Image (cartoon, rainbow, N blue to C red; front, side, top):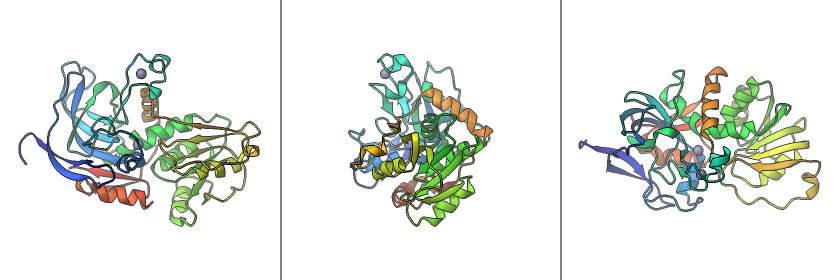
Length: 334
Ligand SMILES: [Zn+2]
Ligand SMILES: [Zn+2]
């Protein structure tokens, strides 16, 4: 290949498949690291970006925000990483540091954020650059492909999971994809009972959930054998919120973990009555990342990945869209 160039899968027209391009390897700014990408997870958010369900992506755009790679060069201000270090690059790519949210330890809600693989170029490429202050170290317990899903499915899954209280023993999980398969292991490890809800008839998904420690698995429209103390919704499907409320005990919480969801149908107030609550979870803070990446090898969380070469990014996205990925899809470049 031409020196100084890299292969990348690029979103040029929203709504159209990614195209393979040869692009110049980016130059790191003083606060950035240049990273050779080894693996990049394929997240549902990437689908929302390519399907135009999220406003104003950078264009043209290299998607991907679950990146594991090796630092090859550092900008002049970077002291935390050196060439040769393995890093993880997550969704949160930059925060302003001075808006009311940043000033109150809620940088996940920053007014002027930048996101990897959405408003910044991401990891569907052989190289990428990232602000060193938002990169993480990944435990050597994980290979590159196995570590990639920790960076969004894991981190945002974990932030959603943290919204439930210690005494919430019975946890429902709606949508059994990459995040659910990670969080089920954490919840099981902490002694909670996990009730897994999949698409009706998805026997494979249900047995996958049981294998990972769920005590019950069924269809999303079924009632579980006992009421839930809390539910997390990972699927981007609005009516699941109503289904979850129907299965939740008084005082129960329903957490919406996705960045996008179809409209939520009207429902009678009695489903919310009894001090049930609904909330969404947005993005992550660097603290969530540090906490989760320290916890994952202690559980230990084992990720199940389906690996595709970089140039098959469209195939991986299509399989994810049709619900045909068990665990997490990951692109590799080596
Ligand atoms: Zn801010
Ligand atoms: Zn993601």
